[in-house]
Amino acid sequence: MQANADSDPAADPDPDADPDPAPDADADPDADADADADPDPDDEADADADADADTAPDPDADAEADATPEADPVLLCTFAAPPVPSGGEARGLRVIFAIAAMAVALVIALVWRNPWAPAVGALGGLAVALLSGVASRDDLEHALGDLWRPMISIVGIMATTAAAAEVGIFTRLAAWIEPRTRGPVKHAFRFVFVIAALTAAILSNDAAILLLTPVVIELLRTVYPRRNPKFLLPFGFAAFVAAGVAPFPTGNPMNLVVASRAGIGFNTYAIHMIPVAIAGWIVAYLMLSWCYREVLADEAPALGAAPPTIPLSGSAKLVLVIAFASIASYPVLAALGEPIWPVAATAAILSTIIALRAGAAPRALVGGISWELLPFLYGVLVVATALARAGVTDALSGLYAQTPMPIATVGAVAAAGSALIDNHPMALLHSLALHGAPDRYVFAALVGGDLGPRLLPIGSLAGLLWTHQLRRQGVSVPLGVFVRVGFVVTIPSLIASLAVLWLVTAW
Image (cartoon, rainbow, N blue to C red; front, side, top):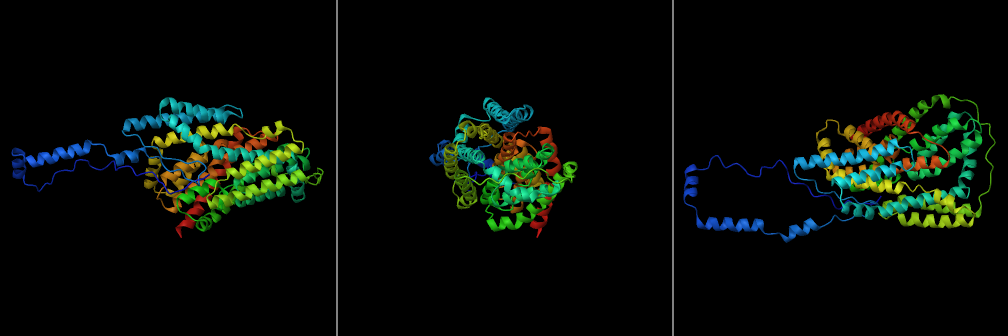
């Protein structure tokens, strides 16, 4: 996601300022009486001139009012803070309607058991925001203008992954991993978790999920031909949960955006967040192992035949090179302040052409793209804008200024908000609410934003991509299971990560 931190919303005037200062208690009452009784014509002329000046339009002020915030080239989604409504009653109504819009989106997304439920829910919340007036037609146009680049990136990444699957790359990767997973199931589980964590740290959390999830499922079905159904969810969650707190800002695009806006450099980020990430990984692994302790207690080794070692075709090698080159370029492009969408689109086009020439079915390639993600992201961004206009950013700033435990509060709010409205809009809200705050507050927001999406599948693009990959592999993740596992794993790892962050920043 791209942004530049050069433009920040203007500070609101102080609501506590007294517009009519009290008269000086030491002033001479007789002099005041004389002045009232015998007005000076010159004073009256001056007063009239002042009144005219107050009522005359100020062209500079009009120009400032008409100016639109400068788009930030580091963010894939720019975000301009809308003006907060004046008046307590107006603000209250906007808050109510904005929350209602978000509630509609959540209820539909979570209750309706359909792959398109998040998209329909987000668009339903958008409709409520429009009808209630907390979102406007301009918001729709701005959101579309802001999102077309990340949408191209998302579709490009999924199209490249679909092409890789069709040319047999994941089958070959499973054969390479298989010898390292022989033995008790818990050994294979530990190996998958470590590989997923390292992949997420070096590349990105999205890349780890896109690459490893289908590989793991393919491997399990081959080496555990009869027992694999009970192993699919534990190993799938291992690939998802291991992508926790990003130890480097390039491990999560939104972390890079927020850190850049706060003026936090790469080395400063890494020094503080590497120990936090390690603590989160350890606790997450222990809690996930405890969740599936009965399944992982199976000591019988893998008895299935090793996956056939089929040499990669020339087409598969080309797609593999394109996929790895594009994914590896994302952190570099982000560090240089360049967008990733041209690379993602180019990789998708080239991979699709190669897969089609190798005999892949067009329908399979199109079906490999989770199209429902696009309206979901669009609707959620507009609803997040409505929340900001209703004064959410001001409320967050006030809360963080008053809390006696700022790191815990910021981290908890970031985690809950990311789970409910997606971590991207929540990160954008926090980038405004934490402007000028100490670095430790920003780190806490990043920790919560990285871990909170484990609580609900709509909490992040990575979570949606993960469920999409599992559906393509014929694996269903019930909402109740996701929430239960997410709660058991996320809450302890969030507490441990914030505690380590407190220790690191206390030095």
